[in-house]
Image (tube, rainbow, N blue to C red):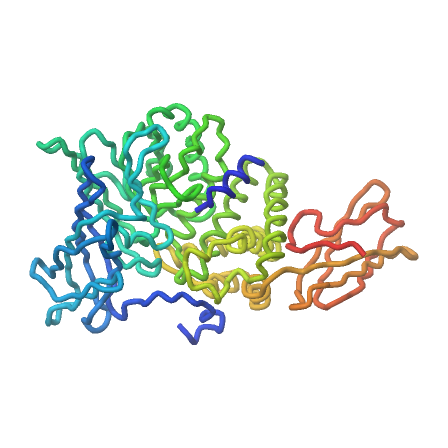
Length: 534
């Protein structure tokens, strides 16, 4: 997703044994030891009379080992907001449970069956997660806005990205509303009482952070199909033509990512104007964009590319721990740049990376921390310039060090292996090492798990056909090891040499034909660093 403020500014201005790295996380979510949810069916009734929702959730649960107690997340009623349980059933028979600390703990009935079906009936007013409000045009609306762990406010579920399942929504709402939701529409039926039932089903496994519904008055249009996947726009009727125009680029973005990365996982791709706390929220197959993204000026192509990139990274190949969210946000940030580079050329890559570098440096001055920060225990705090812009910059550096062909081969292999599944940073590293044949341990340790970046002082002298380049790393906490391109300008021509910096200070000799008129470090923006002239 994109934070609303940063999105507006940017787009207007422009397992333990695997590895020590596998354990670097402080995700405190208590996971079920055996129960694995395979499928959700959410039956929700919405009305205009109140903000109370009546819900029934049917869960298909596989027990991988012993059939034992398991927990679901649901925010309990406290004063105005929260949910009241009306019953918990196993195969239509009441089952023992407790409901405390916003956890439903279900005690399965005795028996050998390793697959069980549970039904949870509940009612209440969600404080968050399901945004019940009015649109900018004053129309009543209901929008799912779950990221990172807000689904528990309205959907009893395992509200963590490590547990993914197929999802089906049965939405009963007044018949004057249009309904879109995660999955493919499989039914729309007018009922006798002024209500309408709409059913959407997504067979691919998804995490609760990226399931959604949108219920209000919409104008919608099929924008096209890519590899049999329908691409559509759902916008407020007052924004009809502007919205169809602004979101129209989605088909071109979709084509690029399918071609470059691999198959798309979901039943459709709807692009929805919505009430959301974010600039964009990458809900699987049903992306939400902030209301004012629609202007008719086609200014949100980069935002659209970011959210569509998430369909591969974050939605399909998902982080297994919140601390590794750069595998979602860093990837979406850089793949949006890659898409724009493919359309507008390398100058666009340079422009975006320069903006991102400035933000990384400014952020680090106040928040000296690594991309994977084990001190963070709250999912709402894992998002930062580190996980977005710095994560994107790491991929940019990896691309350059491996070369385009190897980089893309590694990306495709990573996605193929972890499609519809979960990964950690060590998994991504392992795939890239296998494809490239290179040991990337130092690369990942210094760029992902170490704070900061090289801060370089430098100067140069010329003597007898040689340039002497003096480099010094001024940061105290770590000595980085990196290749650095140097552009030397002489006689109206420029040439690039590469030096390998792996110490506190070094002097490099570079042969030239005459005294250079100027020199520049990293002219093509392949290294994240801060420059200090001596």
